[in-house]
Structure formats: C-alpha cells, structure tokens
Amino acid sequence: MGAVDQRAVAASTAPLVALLGNPNCGKTALFNRLTGARQKVANYAGVTIERKEGSFTSAGRSYRLLDLPGAYSLNAHTPDEAITRDVVAGLRAGEAAPDAIVFVVNATNLRLNLRLVLEVQRLGLPMVVALNMMDVANKRGIHIDTARLAQELGVPVVETIAVQSGGEKALVRALDALDLSERVAPNPLSAIDAVPVEETQREVRRILDAATSHAHDTGNLTEKIDHVVLHPVAGPLLLAAIMFLVFQAVFSWAQVPMDFIKNSVDGVGQLLGAHMPEGLLRSLLVDGVLFGVGSVLVFLPQILILFFFILILEDCGYLPRAAFLLDRVMGGVGLSGRAFIPLLSSFACAIPGIMATRTIQNPRDRLVTIMIAPLMTCSARLPVYALVIGAFIPDREVGGVFNLQGLVLFCLYFFGVSSAMGVAWFLKRTMGGSGKQPLMLELPAYHWPHMHNLALGLWERGRIFLTRVGTTILTLMVIVWFLSSFPGAPEGATQPAIYYSIAGMLGRALSFVFAPIGFGWQICIALVPGMAAREVAVGALGTVYALSQAGDLENSLMPVLAHSWSLPTALSLLAWYVFAPQCLSTLSVVRRETGSIRYSFIMAGYMFALAYAASFITYRLALYMVAH
Ligand SMILES: Nc1nc2c(ncn2[C@@H]2O[C@H](COP(=O)(O)OP(=O)(O)OP(=O)(O)O)[C@@H](O)[C@H]2O)c(=O)[nH]1
Ligand SMILES: [Mg+2]
Image 1 (tube, helix red, strand yellow):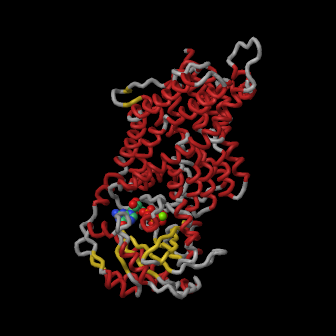
Image 2 (cartoon, protein in one colour):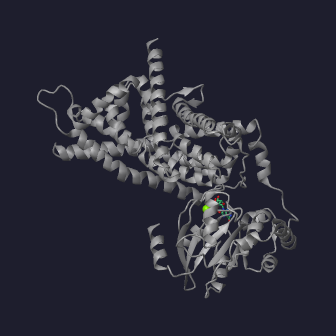
Image 3 (cartoon, protein in one colour):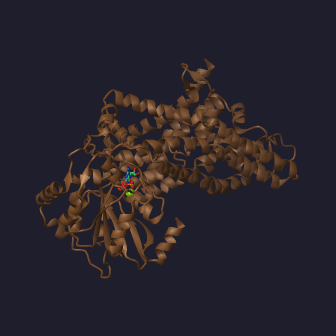
C-alpha cells in the first residue's frame, strides 16, 4: 500500500471525501475499489476500527478518500464510533472536517440505514448517497426509486455494487458533479441533537413509503438457512462438525505441498553442502539460515489451508452465527457478545484482535477481552503444534474416520478457547461483573464467498507469514546460529560443540527451571528466541538439532525430535505453547491499548504461571501413564 500513501501525500490539497455508513454496508469494499487498496473486508460488523486514507483521480480531479468505522448513530457509543463522529464533525485535533461525504447505504436494509443518513445530512456538508449491494437488492426483488429518494433527501443518490468491477462508476460520476469549490464547515453536533428522535423516525417512514416498494420481496433464503444453522440442537452440532473438518483438512491436505517445500529445502542444502568448503560460512548458511528458516517455511501450506476455511466462513456470513451460538457460553463467563469478533481475529494474531476490542463499549469488558485474546490460538502457534504433533502423534485413523493428528490439533485449539473462557470468568468475578449483556450483533445476509476476497485474504496471510520468515525469523535464526556456534568446543569435548556455546550455557542454566516440566537444554535454547515470535522456536530447534547432529542433513527435524524427546516432553511442550505468552509484540500492544504497562506484566505473569502449571501436570501425568 506504499503507492497509495505516496499518492495521498502528493494530493494533499485535493478534496477530502469521507465514506460513512452503518457497519457492514460495504464502505471498505468501495474504498478498495476506488483507491485500489486492499483493506480487509469481511461479512460482519465492526471490521474497520481506524480511519484509513487513500486517494484516486477522476476527470482530472484528485480526491482524498477516508474509510471510517461503521456507526449506527452520531451519538457515539463505542470508541470506534467516536472516531467516525469526530472525523466527520471536524472535532479531531489537527484535522479538518471532510469536504464531502459519501454515505454508503445497504440497499437491502434501507429502513435501518436511513436514520443516520438524515442525522448526517444535518451537518450540512456536500453529500452523495451510494445505494450499495444493489445486486443483492435486485435479486431479492427490493425496488427502490432512486430518483424519488434523491428528491426526498435533496442529495444525489446513486446505485453501487462494491464487489463488482465497474460497480463504483455511478458514484464517481456523482462526485465529479459535486461543486466543491467552496469549503463548507460542518454544523455543530448540537444541530443534530436538537431534532427529536421521533421526528427523525417519522421522516424515515415517510421517505420509505415514497421511494420503496417491496411488492415482490421474494422472502429470503437467509432466514431459511438460519432455521437450521441457528437451531438450538442442530446449530451447535453443525458448528462442531465444521470446526472439526477444518482441523482434519489442515493435516490431511497439507502433506503433498509440505513434502515439496521440505524436499526443495533439503535439495538446496545438499547442493550447498556439496559445493561449499566445510567451514563457518557453510554452517551459517546450511545449519542457521536454511535449516532454521526452512523448518518454519514448511508450515506455510497448513496456515493457508486453515485460513482458506476461516476466510470462506467469514465471507459467507457464518461467523457471526457462530457468535450467536456461542453467546450462551460467552455470556455465562461474563463476556459481551461484542467480544466475539476481537477473539475471532485473535486466531490469526492477537494483535489485531486486541485492537478490535475498541468496538466494546464497557471498559471493563474490553479489558477482560484484551487479557484473554492471546489465549486464542494464533497462527504463529500452528508451526509449533504441527511440528510436535507430526513428530509424536501417529498419523492414523481413529474410529475409522478421524485423523488422530487432526484430532489432537482440534483439542489444542479447544484447550485454548476453554481456558480463555475460564480466565474471563475468573477476571469478571474478581473485578466485579456488570451482569450478562445481551448480544447485540447484526446477522449479515448469507452470500457466496467472493473468489476475489478469498484470493486476496490468502495472499495477505501468506505474505504476512513469508515476510515474518524473511525478516524476524531469519534475523533471529542468524543470532541463534551465532550464539550456538561460539565459542567452539574445548579440547577433549565429549558433547557436540553447541553444548559449550553461549546458547548452550544459557540453555543449560535455564534447564534447571524447566527440568521439572521435562524440557532439556536444547528446548530451553529454543524458548528464548521464541519469546520474540513463537514460530522462531521451531526454527531454533531446527538449527539447534542441525548443529547437534554434526552434518546429518538428510534427516528432517521431525524424526530427529521423535528420536531425541520422550513423549511426555513433547506433550508438555504442547501444553506450554497453549498458554505461554511467547510474543513480545502482543505485550507491547496491550500496553498501548490499555495505556498502562501494568496489564502487560499481569498478562505475562498469569500466562507464564498457567503455562508452567499446565506443562507440569501434563508432564507428570504422561510420565505416570507411560510407566504404568
Ligand atoms: N453482494 C455484495 N456484497 C457486498 C457489496 N459491498 C460489500 N459487500 C460485502 O459486504 C461485506 C461487508 O463489506 P465491508 O466493505 O467490510 O463493509 P464495511 O462497511 O467496511 O464494514 P465495517 O468496516 O465493519 O463498518 C463483505 O463481505 C463484502 O464482500 C455489494 O455491493 N454486493
Ligand atoms: Mg470497513
């Protein structure tokens, strides 16, 4: 998006147009279409939480375009709604009010959207109304008399389809036709509050009667599907079945591409090994970079498969239904329904998840949600889980249908979620709860996933992963290699050189702390750089064992681990990774979002304590079971 930013700077005198509207009406999709940006769109409310600026040019005129969080009203109830209100009313420090507003309306739900249109209109800024989702409205036989609506509102009204190329044309034409030569200052917000709500409602009804007819609204498929999906018995069963299949697929579909990546990495390693003289440089390239980075890289297919499913479920509109089904559980531990989206985002990464808690109204609810977000299994844990599962859990069928490895992965995710619920319950009790909050979540209409959305989303996940591998992980791997290679082994050494290295000494010192939960010094070496980013632990293990093995390149990491660790150690490491706060960026975002370092410490403290306890119990139980 660098290009977009640069254009934005160049065009800083261009008129500023703000996209405004209810949540989930397609503002970001329109923004992307107009500016060529690739911001996230998803089929549920509250995806955009910060203002984003871009620019575009039409008919020789440049525009700056603002994407804003959706709002139901200008009397802001949540922090993200407050951003929207302050931006359009020109109340943000150091930022002028927009020169014009594009009000995006979900054409299939005009009734709900019109109130805010009327409120915003009272600001007195030049405005165009974009009736978006016209494709869906047409399919459902909803007829809107655009000309009449424009006449009633006194502003231009155009039809758009934000998900179709060219679907934004009418909007651009309407913008070009606006007279923006004179800057208009918005009326104060008090002008909006001065009009009683009932009067606005009456006006909404009048306009609806005049401009719409539902003569042949074909009823809708969404209701029929929801009959099953939200059914009290069938619904949860379906949810469980879907999640189960997803985790199965992560293991059973990934084998071929994973083998391919592994073989390529091995091939390059052998090539380097054959053509480079034995020495430090070869060791750095092969043991450090290639073996370290390669052992993380092989998990790309599994991450993509997981997100393939999450993105489909997201785009078709299933995920908010899952929130509905889980509301009982969430409400039972005192979480607000609004917590669902932040928690869901945390499955990708806790950082956007924690930022998304800005949509939560009650500060105490928000804090609890922030505190448990890192317990949701972020995608950085997947490589660790997949490595240990691949090495220790036999790839066989259970009950004739289920893949045992997929089953174990499912359980790990389940532990993450249920412990998050437990912690939330505990925090709510100790902080004094605010009682159960009803879930106020709008259910979007179902639609087929847009292939374009899906491709973009996968590309985005892949890019994030590969960038991490190429930057953070690569850098840390070089450091790990360095610390693991120097100083070399002394005269008459009985152990591999890494045992005597700086990392080896550190690992051995730490292993006093970790011996009770079954971690030897090699694991301890990997835990330290793993603090910066979880996947690094996998890479570090790759390097550590490559160095310990003295040149045995053909062995991939999994068999080496299976040979070096006991099963109780492996299980204990899995338990550790469910809980341990192995991510410094998360802790720093917590400080930023709560405005206090205190919560970062509390978070790190409680998660380490849980991790140690869980690993201890797992390790001891497993030892006992292996012995008997
Ligand atoms: N069929 C159809 N789907 C659309 C259209 N515009 C947007 N969508 C879909 O509607 C969903 C919501 O779009 P977003 O652009 O994320 O909505 P938003 O207004 O930015 O939502 P918030 O940021 O949460 O306020 C996505 O699944 C889009 O693919 C449209 O014109 N037609
Ligand atoms: Mg948005």
